[in-house]
Length: 71
Image 1 (spheres, rainbow, N blue to C red):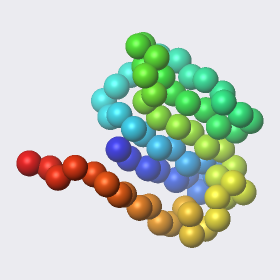
Image 2: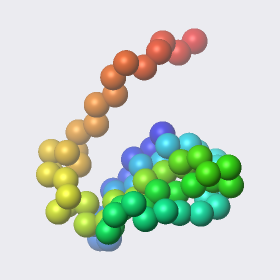
Image 3: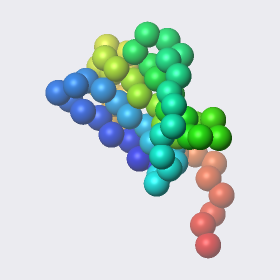
Image 4: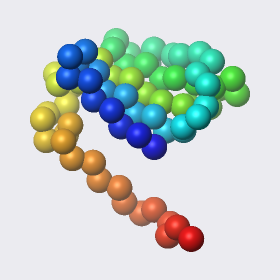
């Protein structure tokens, strides 16, 4: 997973699955788009006007909880 913020575009992109081609996208609300692979699985989420939707602390902190241990 990768999270990128483009300050110039004020866009946040959360890539859930790497190395997967985006086949389609779905606007779930104004400024929020879900990218889908050819099997209609979610690849990523784009959020436009991110600074208006999320506070600066939301943009600077990411918490990961409950992940299983890696081997």
